[in-house]
Image 1 (spheres, helix red, strand yellow):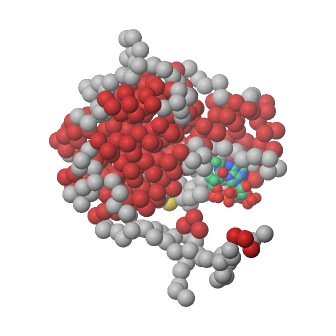
Image 2 (cartoon, rainbow, N blue to C red):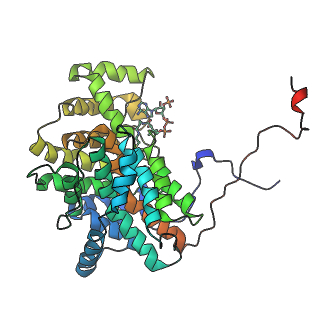
Image 3 (cartoon, protein in one colour):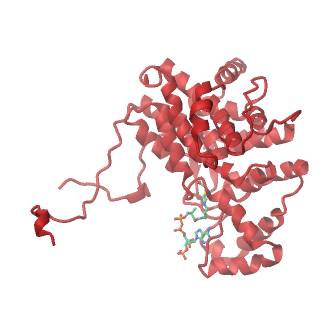
Length: 387
Ligand code: CMC
């Protein structure tokens, strides 16, 4: 009857027009608001990048100072979130499950959460979500290991505050090199155009749900192993390989279709993922401080073998962002269950930038059609006659 495109999973649908992130998978190019990811990772900070993503321009000195001050002033969360909400979870609840539901719960604490037409109220929610994400993440982790919660220390930088809330016991002090590595990882994960989580954010946001509920939906999408969970799988894979000597045999088994080389290949990148290059360098800086991961040599050998093997070359399979990020997270002491949470904290700014853009575009509610392939019309059969 009417003309519809049949495009399950939106493989070839541009669902929106966007000015936020440019991604050229064939040539391995990633830019936020026009700025190459390499320059941002080298020269910028996560908070500055978050400002750039949301407001479209790099901030002036004064704008950055105000932004930092505003974010810093929203890092605390209501005591009931910890005492009643987080403390109510089962002792072995997954931190990402806790984080996702805490985001939705957070919105119920603010009576302006639903005022999405009001730019001032919108800015409030943006600040709160960016500021409170590390606090919630650290709180979920501390609960999961039975440690008391550390309150935010707002004189610290955004990544240092997070690391402090995670690890502070006694006279713990954040190492500046590790703080910078965390900041770089946050920058690299801040946005990646219309990925599954961001698409979820836009779809939910298009119904004019509040941003806390929309962000919870985006986080739920990220929670899936096909999306945010691959770095965890890389660590398991490297552990299973066990030693450099086993690399060639493992690669052969991948080529026989007995498994995938995790951390390799990407739906959009058909070239080296530019984030993977930066992460690989950052990994060496971290290892200087923490000591080398025993899995690094296996990862390097695996990369060397795969990049020369026609199977991977012909299919344009290169390391993606997840190939080395897990090794850094592990060196920083994060348990694998926290890996997706570490992805979600910085992705919050990307989700919110897209949410804001969607509202400014006054986009209609997302409502795709379908290709109906079910039964033709038929008459209802009484239960007595159904056998
Ligand atoms: N190891 C071995 N073979 C692979 C791999 C891999 N990692 N990835 C793709 N292939 C092969 C696949 O078997 C197929 O071969 P053939 O043509 O002989 O059937 C060919 O390459 C094309 O694969 P595809 O599944 O059609 O590619 P896709 O674009 O649908 O999949 C992917 C992309 C990321 C799901 C896939 O490359 C993969 O499973 N990689 C491993 C998991 C991973 O590292 N995921 C992280 C993605 S980056 C993080 C994020 O942005 O969320």
